[in-house]
Image 1 (cartoon, rainbow, N blue to C red):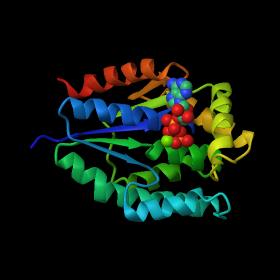
Image 2 (image 1 turned 180 degrees about the vertical axis):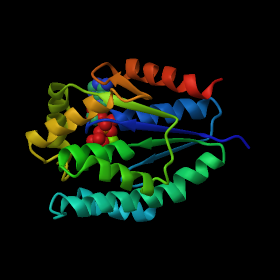
Image 3 (image 1 turned 180 degrees about the horizontal axis):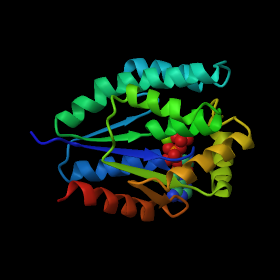
Image 4 (image 1 turned 45 degrees about the vertical axis):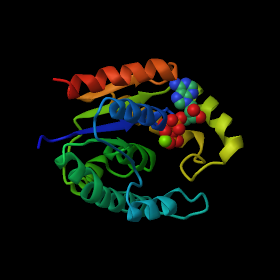
Length: 208
Ligand SMILES: Nc1ncnc2c1ncn2[C@@H]1O[C@H](COP(=O)(O)OP(=O)(O)OP(=O)(O)O)[C@@H](O)[C@H]1O
Ligand SMILES: [Mg+2]
């Protein structure tokens, strides 16, 4: 059996990752592909438990504990879901992956990036995405979406961080966009325009 594909969606909170991940999954399935849509932190029973701890607005978690919790979640997710699905020829879409750790725990919390990259490699068993799509959202647009949802659903521990933290996350993703192999998308465009752009990028790798 041919090896599958591993596609990762990255970007700050509210940049539209989950919206587009669901649309991509639907398109791929309509076109006969076998798809696993998963997310970080989460994706397995253990990881969903960890997700609850990590996102609890009242929780107290040190930066280093946070790094290891995310990493524990990722190693389970990699071993239980991602690797077997790719080996079985499926297309795996992960809503966030290792770059989120570099952004939030590295740029955000100030932990050393080289150490984070080492831990990321261990937790992910060094699997590399075939495609990473980075959702680039201007801070004003982010604030607008944030306010629209806050009233509806409340905020999690990361979303309630102050402006300075969020600016660091935006800076992180700006830097990552320069890295080789990362495809940036303007997330302030319409949902349908972004959907088409995502499809174009995905077709480049899956249709040979
Ligand atoms: N292109 C777009 N234009 C305007 N609003 C959008 C767009 N894409 C998504 N939204 C809206 O913005 C909000 C955030 O979208 P979504 O949940 O997909 O983002 P996310 O990147 O998954 O966020 P999080 O990191 O918080 O999970 C939702 O209310 C969604 O409907
Ligand atoms: Mg989401």
